[in-house]
Length: 230
Image (cartoon, rainbow, N blue to C red; front, side, top):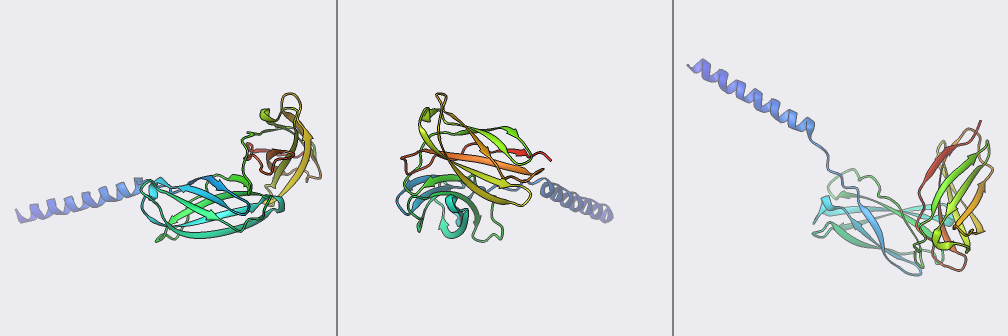
């Protein structure tokens, strides 16, 4: 009888352990990747509203990547904050240069964790403001050293427009920004040629726009990728 009971207890322990390992193997990690938007902007600062709903009321570290678009210059700032009951916090990023375009992306972690989340999507703004011109970008043609783009903003039909094109070389991870001044046609479209590219190389490209007299740029367009010919 005692031997039978021991076998039952042993089998129960083995089953419990196996069940625990099974649940552990099937557990899904929780994503902390935040969302971010521009809440306020001024001459030399912006206020970002950052949300991570899986970190409500938690002490966190927030890493903000700041790119000065005109200069292809990156900086990173880290803040220690406590998220509210909605998983939200506002952070002021100051020290910006007046009349320059910036983009921001955010990663977050619990203060006690070692690893940050993935970065959020980028938001872009000039220190004077952002404009809802909703640019769209497509790549029409490629040669060994050029790409021809269509940039469209239906809210800027027939307007003299400044277009900043961000170009990333996927082989080297180097980025550059080129600026063009175009008058959009009656459909709100302009054709742009990007030259002096490397042959047989993949590039990703996106653009932002503004009217020539505006101080602030739009948000970025969609990002498109293509490879130059060999």
